[in-house]
Image (cartoon, rainbow, N blue to C red):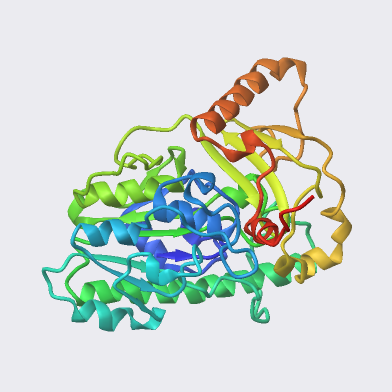
Length: 402
């Protein structure tokens, strides 16, 4: 199960003002991953990583997949892998990694409210891969209702009525999504499948707020990740504090089902070893803005490859009250190609420490590790600027004369 744009803004992650009893119960009966991060701070690239176990620059989706942006999944989707292993694969809701969902490997595509009927209709011995993508938490938000007395405003947002209005609306959508998640869990119970079902809940990236979504700062990359598997003995009410990437989700699903993990998959099963660092990237969203980062427990190092605004704020977020109250706060020029943050001393990533003499060794180590990762994964940025699908389409009409 996935939802849009919530990061870790859930009650079970310590946000007391959020009402999310279904997901709280899921975490209470399973494992909550407290240090899970997306490979990208935007929808299509991150979702493609979930579905393939590959970084965006390796799975073909380096930007948005819908019409007008046209990035397309270039490797097998999880649905195809499970279908090849004899599973009945069903999709509920959208997928946002291709304009051709019929090619992904799903047996059927259903509306999200059909989950109960479909699960109940499956033979009890038929193994299932079910992907459910909730839409409730995506912008535009409905009008804000009653503001909770203990409303939590993330520290990277400016205090004021605009933040109260938008965060109240966000939390309402999370509660609505939580009810949908509860219906899925109830359907598994009624079908007698809950005991043997490995249930995963996550989100694509951080909150759809300025300085979160579309940035490589933690508010853009942090994701909720909850797993429950009563029959798999993975723990109940457990908390995992290891660094985790969302490319690790697919190999975990495959291993749990006894399916060999394909050699091309870059993620590692969550049942296996620990990570010392996670990597993330952005290439395209509203415009070309390539950047790459490495995050360890203590530090974050970002390399920006182009000039741009200090942070990208997507169009739907620009329509919100927070951005409109002070657009200039986010529209200044990007001051530096390199960014280094001490996440213990500066969790909001506000003080860029590149060039600090006492951190020279840390900066050099992280910079080298980031270059090495780009080389090992054959990042196209190493060969120069990355053309978009629109550029390639335009160049097809170029005459064969100078």
